[in-house]
Image 1: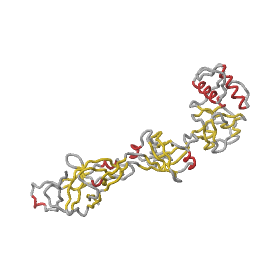
Image 2 (image 1 turned 135 degrees about the vertical axis):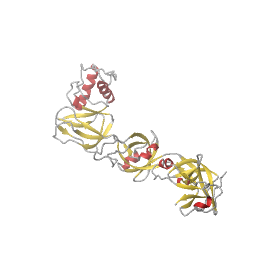
Image 3 (image 1 turned 120 degrees about the vertical axis):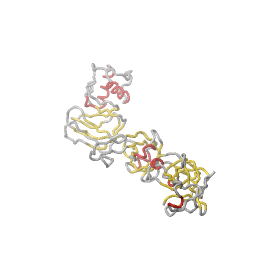
Image 4 (image 1 turned 180 degrees about the vertical axis):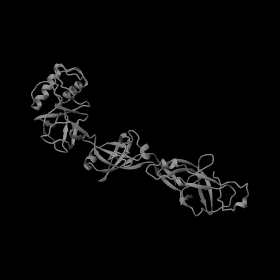
Length: 379
């Protein structure tokens, strides 16, 4: 049921006397609008007259808008880019001269030669611990031994040896190392020097950048930068959009050349104040923007597009057949809740409404309001 509230015409101060009731003013809380991702936030101060005042149409400072019926969605769109996953610098260990480098863009799988030092191949293996010591007979047990044995088994050099994936360097481990060395054309010592392999947590890598030149000596700098072969979408949302990015949440990525591919949110790394360091992504006061990485359900379309700009649509809530008004039409009522002023010819009435979904500076409402009604908004 609606409440009838009529607008008041201006009255001279002495016409009402000291007992005149003060006008009340209703303000839509800023938080209602600030929560809207990707939209400007503002507060609307609106007059709310007492019952019994003279009826009038909306004042010159106000206009009207039609109550619409349709679908309201809290989904947001954020610009981003497709890029190769997990860029990682490769730092050479040991000493020697770089005698072979891969071509930019080439893909190297685990067990393949990543680069060459002193004429000997440095091979890619899968693992998250870098090689830091020589592994051979008599070496102390350790997780690096376990990591090596896992690779030897996966690469097919442990057949018939009964090799267990544990931390012990056994006689069978030495035999598997010799088989691996023979396959590469190396001297079969059964011992692996620390500079002979590069351990990375990827089964295959793509060369993105070379940091060394042929003939240069190994040093502390990176020999190259590699990445995963898959493409991911990366976006840097604004702070007021972060609540939309839920862990493992679904998104739709629109490719620059047309078409879409679904994905899910893998990680959100918050920006940090780096004290005004050059190149900060935030662009203000050294504040770096938060970065969100999205893995794609299918690589086919993404690989056809290649590294490029994309638009990421973050799937949110949706309300169909909803009555929709701008949030600026809402009035905060005494005692709580919200209302809208519905125009009836030359008069207006205040109608209490219930809020549903709020998104994109619009609100879903229910109450004594119907599609096509005119409601008051500030100009």
